[in-house]
Amino acid sequence: QVQLVESGGGLVQAGGSLRLACVASGRTFSGDAMGWFRQAPGKEREFVSAISWSGRSTNYADAVKGRFTISRDNAKNTLYLQMNSLKPEDTAVYYCAADSRYSNSYYLADDLLAYDYWGQGTQVTVSS
Image (tube, rainbow, N blue to C red; front, top):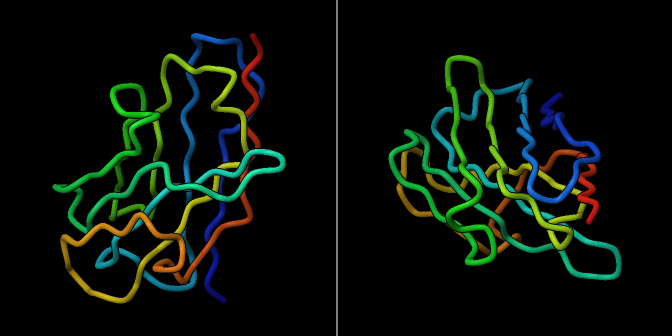
């Protein structure tokens, strides 16, 4: 059974930091691009960041650029999202996802429809 399991969410004050992790099991995702999305209450799920299979290529939404850093450890089958300088508007459920369409590609999709494996999400709440 293929699973993506997120962890690291929680409650933090504005200006604080959190590090999310997403552990994959059931298959290796070392050849796949992976990404983070988020969904705030009453809003659609939106792209946050993506990373290529090797980690050499990354992409960020404008809202998080310069504050968030995506990384991965293929040996541990784990994806990370370091979130610094958090703002109340970052409050959302954060999901990790894998795009298995193209193996060992540097194409990074920001469309959630491109991703075919999803985690269950982890809640991030930033208080003002």
